[in-house]
Structure formats: structure tokens, C-alpha cells
Figure 1 (tube, helix red, strand yellow):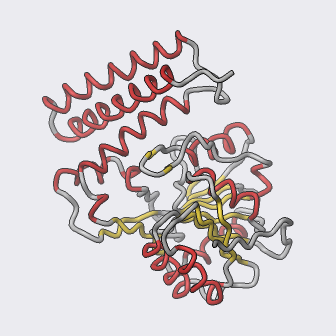
Figure 2 (cartoon, helix red, strand yellow):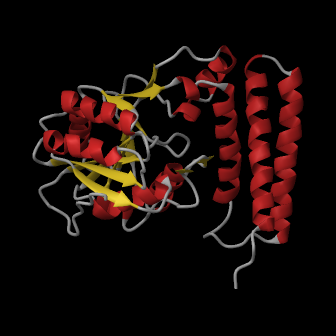
Length: 324
């Protein structure tokens, strides 16, 4: 049995919905919600905490029930596996004028919520805000990936824009572990369900695509809020070369999917071009990973793995059965 307390109409009195999507991470979620109790609670009356259980099979519902009263939280159940499906469910059911996204494996700072509330007042015309995501290592990082952590912070959802507020640009958008968007600015736009983590498939980019659309197509604007800090807890299993490789392969697959238009089948010419690019990245990156030094070697290794993902995605597209 699952608990699904949803709301079909918006509540004008709710300013901010704090949305957390989770799948089979009961211990991580419990730590995050306990952090909410200690840093946010008691939750202000114009703020709601919304948890989306994305088809969990562990004790996630028991954890949610344990914190339901202390955080006055609501919960939803999304049966379709995939982070984008869970986020879209939150979009449909959130009551707040703003949706503040974070993850089930972060610790928010004591001033996190207050910083976002202040941002709404300081930048009344903005549609988007984002804050720093700093690492909280739960184990010593594997020495072989220390440079990846420094150069490719996005692999671990890490970002820091400095000590002062600054406009958000297309070149650097927030990550889903710490971003807030105006509900009305979305106008029915949803996260691309071809992207986003789903089980062992580490597809990425669902929030990037949505935010780029909000900024470039809808003409939205936003600001980085340096005081809205979260710490991303990084366990030992993520601090390995194997995890980085899986992420980079997923990035290559995602690149191919983001290159398609409206989920329409790619033409043979387009697929051939994508395959050539993937093969080039795989071999150029592989050669560079063996011969280059320093940061360049790290970049080439990432390029090789990304190329592997691009090739795999093109092959998946070619072999996919044609539906009538």
C-alpha cells in the first residue's frame, strides 16, 4: 500500500513548495528530512514540503509517514520509474507560487529557505533562482577521480558561483538539487521524460533543457543566490572511476537525445552524423587519455566515455522496433 495525498487545485496562501523526488533511498531520505526538521522546522505556514515517491519498493513510505507531522508534509506516489516522471508529478500537484527543488541526499543550510524567500523580494521580476551545491564527502575520494571532481563538478551535482548574486545565463544554469522556479513562468512546460535518471540508466540534462527553454524561449530571467547553500552527500560508491564512467556514458546518450526534435525519429543522415561524432569522440578521447597530461587528459577521458554513450544511443535508435 502507498499513501498519496495530492491536491488538485492550487492554494493561493502557499508561497513555496519544497519538492523532493525519491526512489528506494530510505536512509538517505530520512537523513534529509531530519535535516529539514533541524534547519527549517517548524515549517512556515506559507511553505509546503512535498515528497514524490517514485515507485519505491523499500521502506520509503514508512520514512515519509515518520516525518509527516513534524514537517506537515504531503506525499505523492508516481508509479512510472524515472526522475523526470516524478518531477512532472510534482509540477502538476505543487501548490506553491514557487517550486523549490532539492534532492533526497542533501543537507540544506540553516539560511537556505530564508535566502530564497529574500530573493523573491529582492528580484520580484525573476523567474528562476539557483544556489551553491557543495560536497560533503562520506568517504575519502578515490585518488583516480580527484581531478574529475575538480573539473567536472556536474558529475556530482556540484556548483558554486561565488559570494555575490549574479544573473543566471544559458552557459551556466542551476542543478536540480538546488533550484527554484516560478510556477506561472512554466506555463505547462514539463521535464523531458527521455532524460533524467531511471534505475541504472544515468541519463542527464532534464533540468538543463527545461531551464534553457525558460530562459531562451520564454524570455525568463534569474539569479544565483550565494546564501542558499546545500551540501550534497557523496558516499563511497559514487567516488569511484566506475561511477564517473557511467555518468559520462549517460551524458553521451543524453546528448544524442537532446539533439532530436520533439521526440521524432531521426533521419538516416542525422543518425550517420551522430554516429560519426560519437566514433570520433571515442577514438580521439581514447588516444588523448593515453597520451595527454594534466587537465587535458581528464577532458579526453571524459570525451572517450561520452563518445561510447553516443555510439550506444545511435545503435539503440537504429535497432529500436518501428511502431505502426
